[in-house]
Length: 291
Image (cartoon, rainbow, N blue to C red; front, side, top):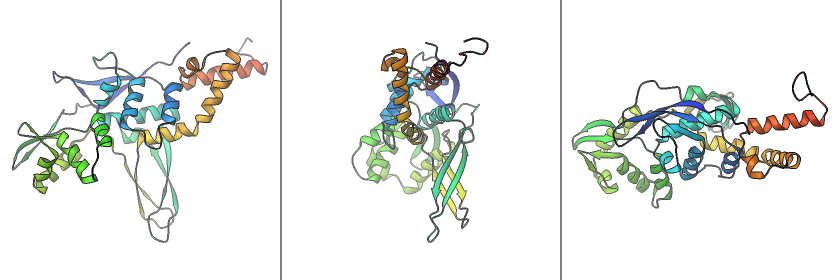
């Protein structure tokens, strides 16, 4: 069966190998029905490991890596993973998305539509991002890297308070004078030093800016939104899960394909076969000029 071609995608940060080479140019395959169904069943916010499995399924060659598995996808930065999710969503549903927010102002609580262009959230970055960011501290030279999918997975599985889990994350991201930190060591740094590290990462990050601002149409108060690309994609796919089941049923009934064969197709191919089937059942020409 014919499949859609892959789409080239340039990661904002890229994957650095052991030799320090950065791999940014990738190939993004369209989601098949199998990935659509898995993401639709992943809940409100798909976990980091589920996201790694998804990216491994739809991310083809990445630089000199001919194949990306879940372990390699987990090594991508959080920003690169969000960038890929925005591309996947735009390919499936288009570049525009409308978000709905409730005004937080007391006595208002009006609903507002917020129009977003996904391409504007994560424009293509031509220049290479550094592997780590450096900042001079009174305690020595610190280096901080961007969080990865593996960091997020370990954080999601960690126990403890929010402050303890935050300290765990920072201890994984920061090195001072070549020495790795423990969570307690991170917390023992002066607040000024910790703030300097956080500010360096915030200003130097290659991740998409997913924080959105809009005005309430009723009282003009500012609305703040934070877009989660994977949660957005999962929510939209969950809304179409019943249609996917119907597509499988119709194609299996008429073509006698297995469920696995049908779910291996991207939606554009499934929809094309459904269009051909409808034309044939209604007596229309399958292709202009002949029947």
